[in-house]
Length: 580
Image (cartoon, rainbow, N blue to C red; front, side, top):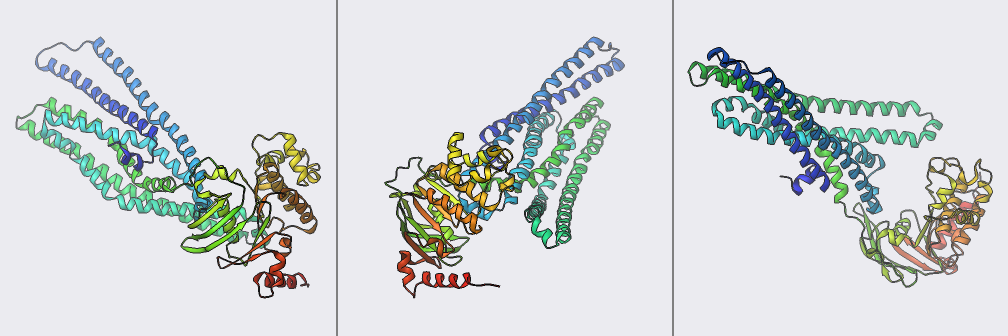
């Protein structure tokens, strides 16, 4: 019952399964102990009835008080233990789940994130875990505990009097069969609601990220109207889901409560026929007041379990996605990067088709070609941000697919056109390149990247917060911080993705000076869109339609008038002379 299948069904950790077992056990104790309270009432009522028929004395007041005090004390203890195991231990599971998801996401290949947008992942980490937290804390212990305690009580009642027991309990299985019959409808409603929630998150995120463009084009009202429609659609799906669940839950509750009527009718019939006495009927009426109580909550809980299946599947989808694994030992013979018949497909679309080339250590190798030819894909494959579909990529003779990505990336520095900075100080953003670097090392790297000029003008210098993604800095300043980070890391392999493409002439000159210091004696792989920026490269690799179309020194390819590189150089020269 509580094996791997149960663990996957509720997306629990090993510790979470143990916590769930404890919660169930104490729920059983609480339910059985509550039934003992009905036993005390039955005992007192029986003694009272005896005084009417046998002239017996009333039970002692002190005995009654002792039983009540003992019951209250034990009830408090059992309820406290139930609360501690169903809430206290489960909240620890929420932390474990979120940390585990973060660790799992950290180890997944970059290609996975191309298939899941930010709003979708955020909904999984926050919304889906929140839903499961409620299931873990409010559902598992109560639901399964109620199953077990009711089964125990049902067996005892059947042994005592099977006729009254059937009259009392028949509605329970019928009610649950009705709920299980609504499972597909509940699941479909949950799927629709989840999609609507992600659509709302996407809309809000898109609006916030593009607020400048929206204002610049006077589209505020149109986007707000669109958001309102998405929110209204989400609200409708939620109401529909609650309505569907509510109908079946209330119908099941009514069916179960019919057991009260059948118990009274059966009891009255058996009393009139002389087969039972009034006290037996009274006992079953007391039992009814308690035996249905756990299931009043369970009926709603089981509907929530059905709706939580979507969240479980989304969580398991992350855990079931293969991670990029490998050895933590990486001792290459030099840092030449070699592509051997590399192929890569993205969403069944072939991006690279048998690509082979070598980027030699101590040289600058430039990847050029039309948009969509596979330049950026090659750079990401070279750092194992993605894994090749076929073929081999080696660094210093070592197949990088056998090396753990974090170990491999310790030998890489990356400077891309789209710089990513954190909402922290200048000092900490640069220090990201080398964990534990001293302030002096950070400042030396910043000086080498020509950052001193603008950092000295900031209100608090290196301790100045730069805003979300460096919002308080210009494009050139953000780019130089990225280069300072790479200089601080001082890795033997450098990947550049047109780091100066979007800069003005002055900033471009400063960034190029910083890059010159960064690239000395390194294995450099440059993704180039402007031909003039790679004329000093040691080697040019021209990609076209996912294949290596040309390879050689810049002057050789440029001299060949039939080459793609020559054509691209000519076209860019023409565009450079364009004027208004």
